[in-house]
Length: 439
Image 1 (cartoon, helix red, strand yellow):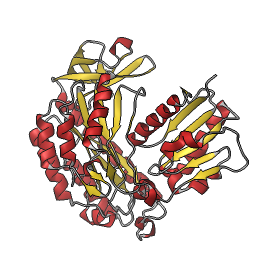
Image 2 (cartoon, one colour; image 1 turned 90 degrees about the horizontal axis):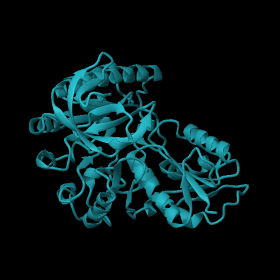
Image 3 (tube, one colour; image 1 turned 45 degrees about the horizontal axis):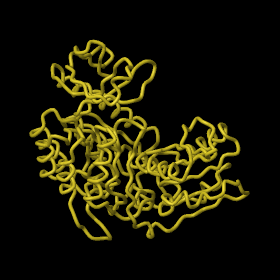
Image 4 (cartoon, one colour; image 1 turned 45 degrees about the vertical axis):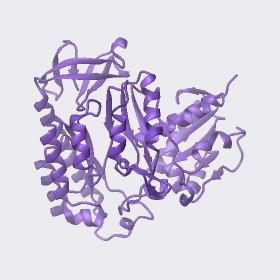
């Protein structure tokens, strides 16, 4: 009987693409991949260092795994595993911790599932993590996350990602195109390009060989993929040329997620971001001029050291005035070994929470206003495989979320609909077919 392995992923789309790739490695090695809630012989937990309480979350997931299978072999990988392997090894039940350079060789390390008294740690210095390992998610959902870049050469004062993932490095264009063709042949209709800093695509062995726009143009020619979505991209790397190409593309969708982090030039300077707010305004205006129906998402951090109430109000007003569609709000949390950790002007937790609440409310206002602009329009929806309480959902190309009564025949199907009206609770009804409505 084949040994069984289960996975749990914390964090970003990039982590999901890598977990899926590691899962295929186990399948090729003769393991049966099962759901996390099943009884497995091995549990792999892919961690994140960006989300708060990494230690607490990791402990909880390990505990849940051992509830399902008390004698299972527990291995921890991911950003948290690279940054704090000793801390993780002290979690009761953990058998192995693998760093960034080791995680894709995990099958080599798990040769014996015997639980020992002391966890094994294989964790090379991040400077030795310089190889790009291609990854993409498959089978988890109808959209596929395709990793095109890893690591980061930026030095934002709040971020541990360069310490956890190393220097910026990329796949080559030919390899990415080949993977996109494989994905297309499998029947997947949407690819989401992902990485740590995807706009910096093109660096191989420390030298720049291509630009992100070169990759975009190459992928636009891949037959069989209906949609390609760009995940988060830095505003200084989202060139007008990229925006212009997406505007006339048949495959790249009018949806951009652009990190801002603060609407105050003072705070952007303290964060060591590589742009000022005027550049951000220019990018948003260019997108909306060329693609009036485009959806624009924004990352913003509240409570960064030195952020006064006046600075926050500056950010709030800046976002309120921008023609954007939704916000991802992050409450600043201290990270050891970052410059921000030593900065003065610490914002009390209660103020961080208040500011976060204000921006979450603003985000809902922005999303509703964006949905309002879409009423009366026809749109094509790609339906996802997940379902809950008798409903499933899908997304339009410009990221309007559609909720529908569950029908297995709709999974991974593109359907033309018409957006009709916003319901009192904030959903949007559509007229064709009658049972569909936006959530």
